Length: 253
Image (cartoon, rainbow, N blue to C red; front, side, top):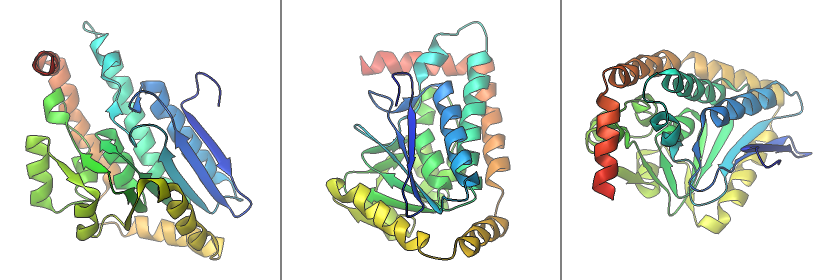
């Protein structure tokens, strides 16, 4: 990985690809990072030698969402907001539409955009310290309720959205959305082991299964998320987002 690279990828002889996100200090991705992640995941899905993708991260947590500093740096225009909306949309869609199953290995915090990635993955394995949530309301934004709805029941999702509360990996395992919860130092190995179980199946059948499962999904996650993004843009246009972010920053200080 070069100094300016956020996403790295490798493919094993068993057909298991690993995508690793590393954007210190908290894996909050800038616009370029979201597009980079989207391109890497899509490229792996198009590689005939890849049978499964494991998506994980280095550092303190899986993903802390959008790099707010990019949005705060542009007060008189909305190019940054448009760009980050498109970047998140591209990354979430790439995970969902990847031609092979994507396994999210989640540790630490999985917030905002992290929920978008994990919620669109095919399978989630998590470490015991993993927490999931959408702090969007505290940032003057909306989005990824589409994906949180795939992880927790509807009323739980609404309560989490309105209060910015988080849910633990153990809670999500009880809901059935997290496949397994393991000690943090075992997460990567557990995810790869599970990926190898899938990779051992006939690849043509697995690719057909992925496409068929997307085809019978109860709702269109791309359209649903795009609808949410419209309200985020509206809050940005009207200045509400800046006011809320500034207020939240002062409260934290």
